[in-house]
Structure formats: C-alpha cells, structure tokens
Image 1 (spheres, rainbow, N blue to C red):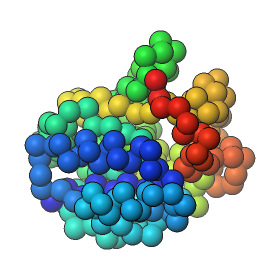
Image 2: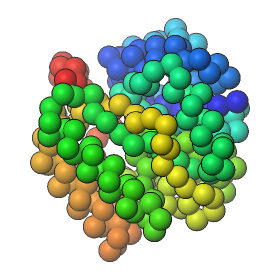
Image 3: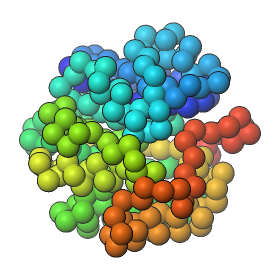
Image 4: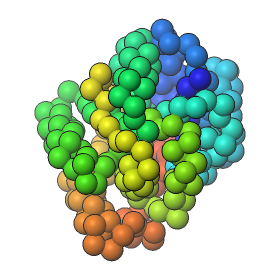
Amino acid sequence: MLSVVIPTYNEEDYLPLLLRSLQSQTFKDFEVIVADNRSTDRTRQIALEHGCVVVDGAMPAGGRNRGVAAAKGDIILFLDADVILPDPWFLQMTAAEFQRRGLGVATCKIKPLSNRHVDKVFHEVFNYFMWVTCAMAPHAPGFCIFARRDVHNAINGFDEEITLAEDHDYAERAAKVAKFGILKTYKIPISVRRFDRDGRLNVAVKYVLCELHMRTAGPVKNDIFNYTFGHKRKDRSKRAR
C-alpha cells in the first residue's frame, strides 16, 4: 500500500483540487492522511468528506511525521495541499519507477501552475539545480517526496526543529542510508501562490540564502527567514495563474 501524507493549515481552496486528482488515479491501493494544524476553515471537513484519515498536525515537518505514524503503507508519498497530480496515471507510473529503480527516497522535477515565463524559468533552474547536486547534496521539495517507511524510520523522520528547508535536510539524510533518485516519469505541477504573495525576487533570495546557511552553518533552526505555513484568506483570493 501507498500512503499519501498531506500537512495542512487553512487549505479549503486548494485541498479539494488535490483530492479530486487523487480520486481520479488509476492506481487504487493507497490511503490519504491529512495532518491538519488546527485549521480555522473547512479543511478538516473537506478531508473527511473525501474519505481521508485526519490526524492532528503541526508545522510541515511535524505534520508529515504524525501522518506517517498513522499510515499503513510501506511507501509514503508526501504532498502539499496546493499540488495537483498531472493525470490519472501519475501514482501508478511514479510508484512503479520508484520500486523498479530500487529507490529509498525520491522526488520529481517540478513545473509551475502558471503561464508566466519567469515562473517557468525559475522552476527549470531549480530542476537543473536538483540534478547537478543530487549526487553530493540531494534536494527534494516537500510538496513531492516518495520515501520507504523503513528509510523514514531509520532517519527518525523530518527534523521538527528546522524552520526552513526541512525537506532538503530529510532528503540528504535519507540518501545516506538508501538510494536517492529524481523520478523521470512526470513533472509535478505546483502552485505559485507563495511567489504571488511574497514576490518572486524575495522568494529566490530567501532560498539562495537558506542554501548558503545549510552549507556553511547547518540547517536553519531559528526564524531568520520568517517562514509561514498556510495562507490566510486574503492570500488565497487569487488562484495561481
């Protein structure tokens, strides 16, 4: 069985889109666990209406760990609520590639849910960065990570003290005990809402500085980058374009 784990906070606008794309999958041997961090909107109700297992969450790292604790599957797929699976074959094809290649942890290349050229360029730059660093410093965005349960347990899950880039830290630690790979089957579509809210240049600079911090001083365990989880109503007034 595959267990899909989704950390949430106030995701009533985006979560239904992801859940519908999951329900349309040709691969059916999976469960969906929503780890909700006390949402004040209809997120929990929506998850329950779609047949998800709902557990109490936390910030993304803690939510993912709690989701795994409630999961039944031997393979875990971590997704964020603003992801939409590209077509009904996604789970079947990616899970098959993950197992065929003998991977312990993996991610997909990414593409923006946006028609803006700058967004396409930004995401392709990140794809190239993931590829050139995968041998020495694997990166895996938290909105799409496949992991074997035994690998997750071997590294004690996500480090809940990290405030930004806990996903990349997870991939790097997991790659020390199992084989890491970037799946070739699909690119995963992701919202650009954080770009719209915080500004593209600001986001780019933040992630570059975070990477430098990780390489020179270790994982970020304070709030110097002012990371926020979830999006308030005013942030969700416009869909990703």
